[in-house]
Length: 539
Image 1 (cartoon, rainbow, N blue to C red):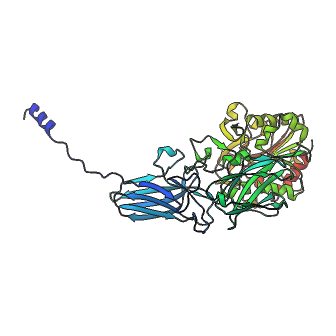
Image 2: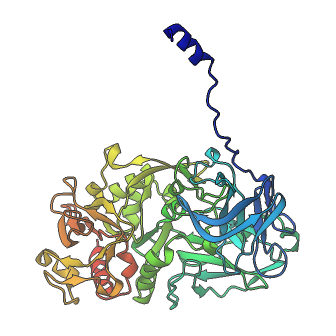
Image 3: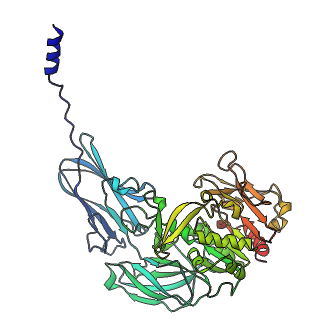
């Protein structure tokens, strides 16, 4: 056959038919409700549920319509950077209107839960509703359920005694009892992330009628009690015994009036790790939920009934040690640095500043003040790790914190101040024991502990780690490694505990492990802290 004719036949031949592939099924009109009255802010894809068994807002109903038979899975997820399934239901459904229901347990932690809906047809084609990351706009939207308890929080983290404060409350309780508690002097050891304990300050309980506010939040004005500087919380309790906590720091009326020691509570870090989802998109409003988040609000309520993140593990043990051992100190939050003009003012009032927790997020002003304090001979104690790592700035009148970048990239490596700086993190997969080194250089640190070079400690708490620090060439001359956890995260990735002194008399101790302060009430750490306090609290 001539080539021209063959080519013509090939051109004219019809293309082979492709097999028909059915379109992916859809959930038409996807929406969620609580079967009762909406709460303010609820929408087609956001509902508020308060699972206390009173028949009012106890369940979440997901409604949709199918055009074809399909298998539908409803995954209720708790989001961090990715969704974690906490409840799942799968049903084979026919075309038409459908409803799938989640009935949360009464003890479900208050926060938002993203419901990811997966629909698959008989051909195996499927579609997922509900974002897989914090880039919510890139995915088909899924329903969000806001579990509400007694959600309460103050408008700022810090107050002076007697100051009038704004307290934000959202709950469907008909009434509330408000009482104030002091954290630290109590003898209660808490092991849960949604429970707080303290000493009742003895003020008469405040009774609040809430019937008018069961479907919308309300801000009330509360007078901060005239109490000594410290950490406190307002406890709000409903008739059904649901409880919410609103934590606040009371600063001293006058800096240095009652103690020459100042304890800084890491309120910036608490809010950075707070996964409260104010906008209701299913992901926490924090950079730890992932991009595009780059700021956090300093006035949000905390999830888990109001306890700051990891407070009972990292912060509470130090407060117990402080009060149980009869020590005296004044307290401020990170935001209180706005009230301190410079390091000279701080050095006039205090001999020792203790960073008891994870002081990761620091403004330029706070860094300047602390560095100047040290340069004037002030003493510093860092009982965690990964301190002064991120440079942040306050916006909107101190209500919002924005992350800028690493301090070491800005030419101010944290080791130059602290003696060590952040080295590595493995989320606690490996915990190790500190081994004492160079005990002759700091014999006072080990006095009464029975520890000498080669001794180990940390057995009673399962070891140390999570995030660790190490020295660098920027560490001040004379920085001594007093203990270390060799090769904790691999060869050469070692946690180092350090101490240094400057010619001006400044003394600086750094623990080198994130959870060191969390063992403050255990032996030998409580003795080490006694020794540190005795030496560093003196000018």
